[in-house]
Length: 461
Image (cartoon, rainbow, N blue to C red):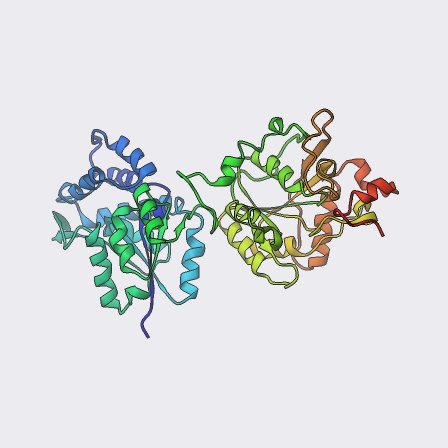
């Protein structure tokens, strides 16, 4: 039975930016490339990182074969090997989960790039890819002779090279996948059954829209769009500023416990629909987006649903008990994201709202056991005065005496991964420890306070 394949472009698709500066640095270190810089090359590289391939850049790339005339092949291969780790570190975070998805489906994963084969083969090996389709230079007596062996693998020639590889390996292109950022890879994308525009340049963005090709970004979770490299949640960071929210005051002394990079699971207590905004404000101080798990009804709403998905939210259908939300959250963590979970699952009603001992579900600790990501506790207090549960909207008109929202972020919770019950209790205790003293003692609420814990139209029973 024929195997399908997934073909990945390299620069601006799998990599953040171009591989050129890293490969050139190792070629210089090997004494192969001169120290003199090409006039305007730095500017072209910066333009490339933002806007993608252009004919002037590719004209310089095409000339590289002549420049390599007389170079020792083994030294070039060693330069590629020396550059491989630096390039691995620049691979987009959601590339690895995508590779695994294709491998689990039995597909071959192939690098398809204009970059010379001898320079990128070590990177492909480091990534565990099955093969490489790339430009090859003609070799005579262990050195390059200044010519390209076959075609310069770019544009239609890249499609043809992939087609030849597929024919040689019995791979049906009509059932295969291709991923690229470049308009000049449109011939390749058109040749496969499953084309994906990845971080597309402006022309490919338009072409993908016209042809209804999926547009994805391997530096963000699936479903999160970007415009000029910026995702919606990053734009919201401009609005998630305490001074812009006049109907609430914020006490957030520090968020240093949230890692500046890498995966983390942020857990917090649940007192109000405003909790999500409060957490967003806290995490925005760290400059990171957060992927929030929320009930599926939010994602099914006509307006809120697409917004929640665009922000990277993860829907949870509590009625099914499915592990798919945790698997999706695990993929986000594998990509180095922050995932936020409110372990209580819902805002407590009635007297349970005032209980100092919080009851949590297993989701956060199960996710931690799956990924070994640190669990960072957060304590929220006062959000219920901004948006009480018995109100359909936040009290945005309360600008003369806005309530104080207190947010505290604690150190990672030590877990043993032996008992979900025990670890969940540890997590909930860590959250309680971050609450003010009045949140850690039992008290009798007034009838008015009890009423505020119920949805509109529901009276305390």
